[in-house]
Picture (cartoon, rainbow, N blue to C red):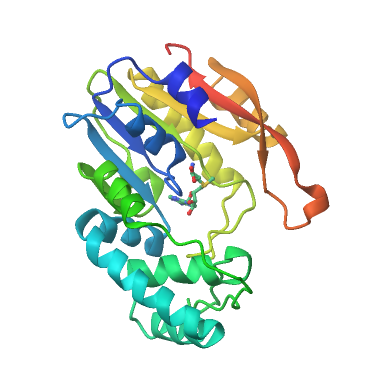
Length: 263
Ligand SMILES: C[S@@+](CC[C@H](N)C(=O)[O-])C[C@H]1O[C@@H](n2cnc3c(N)ncnc32)[C@H](O)[C@@H]1O
């Protein structure tokens, strides 16, 4: 999908890039690798997930110290898997939060699960692994390099969008699926949220930005588009995504790539 968006939807000259639902940033990192992002490109990357975005910021600023802390956690884990996991989770919940602890907990929890209780305490159990797959120093430095000129923000998607657009502005939106909970706020992503996003996407496309919205094929979205953005274009793109905790229900879920008519 990221490759497809790079090839088919990215403006030839990219002056500004906004990604309000950043997550793992597959599209941004693909654009960066393919030299679409240059020192002159304004970049705003946002997500509501605070631990994730704070991890990116720490990597952006201090890649070497993130790596050395991670190394220490990995060494301690090889001595005592569960004991280290429990200790780091306890430290995290006591307010000692860091990029290395975040990466470590994600990589060593059961199925890579990140779960928080109502009071925001991380409570995913430890996984059983022979070895951990932690990023190398090269990988961390590559991520830091890709983020060098980016504004990395935590917050609601709408606040991360520009009010004015320069030529060559690209806005890529990959929102949560309908009904999905944001693990960090417990807030559900609703039809009203999706409607506001479609309205905003249309308005930005009408004002000249290249707007790309990706979403699983869905009847509610179809109705919203019909009502709020009738003159959009959409392409169905087949992809595999784990959207269900029941493995028998995981499979090929076609996605829509929705844009304004100008792109
Ligand atoms: C489908 S994922 C994005 C995946 C991303 N494209 C990638 O390559 O990993 C949706 C993201 O939206 C974030 N999110 C959920 N509600 C949000 C909100 N109200 N404002 C901003 N981000 C939100 C989630 O934390 C999640 O990272």
